[in-house]
Length: 247
Ligand SMILES: Nc1ncnc2c1ncn2[C@@H]1O[C@H](COP(=O)(O)OP(=O)(O)OP(=O)(O)O)[C@@H](O)[C@H]1O
Ligand SMILES: [Mg+2]
Image (cartoon, rainbow, N blue to C red; front, side):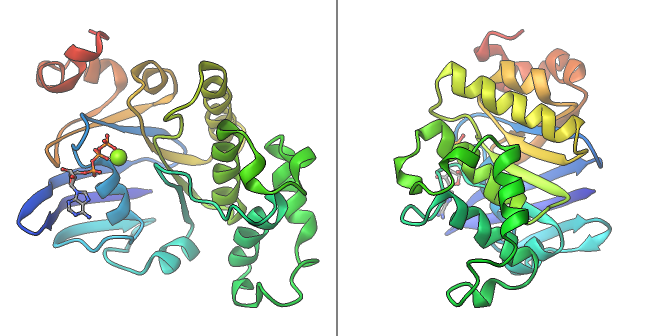
């Protein structure tokens, strides 16, 4: 579904991404792991068009998408959540999800006009399936941190993507909130057949949900493959996993 080849990105001479490679098969949950500053968020920003690559290729469903604008990539069927929560705090829960449902139907330019009733059923369905229905009329800023993260994923899914990118979906969460997100990821993958690409520092979560893992170190892909192969990879152990206590 997604292929990244020889991707490079420098920030004022600092090579943040230096030969990143990644292949995401349709229907799988794939995790990108690596130490702080390895380039995981930068890679996601390049894939979704929020940053421009210096060189290399990104293909999504066999189509070159390198350096396309984020909204064009979104319309092709890719959606994401951010490492820091990215919602409209003053809008209600329902209005937040409605923005992405409207965008999916290319009605987003009309959003501030009489769109309130537009696609309301579809929006309510998304809220229902995320357990957010009862909060629909509350302002987003009144939700707990964990529910705001769930809402951010709901917003991303409002556009009915084929591929969902989650940048540290459980960062800063309690263990109960983390479990909720893990169950959500499994449900989206197993029941909806959604392809998911995520970054995480929580290795237990990664080895629980991922069917494939890619390891990034100083912007370079040093390994990718099945979880058991990654766990046993000497280079990966030395670079990262050794210090997590997982091997
Ligand atoms: N806009 C930018 N300008 C300059 N340097 C940047 C910029 N964005 C990221 N960097 C640098 O690029 C490197 C990779 O950052 P990135 O945020 O992608 O790492 P990460 O793997 O997501 O880290 P974390 O696990 O802490 O989220 C870091 O050294 C960071 O300081
Ligand atoms: Mg990051």
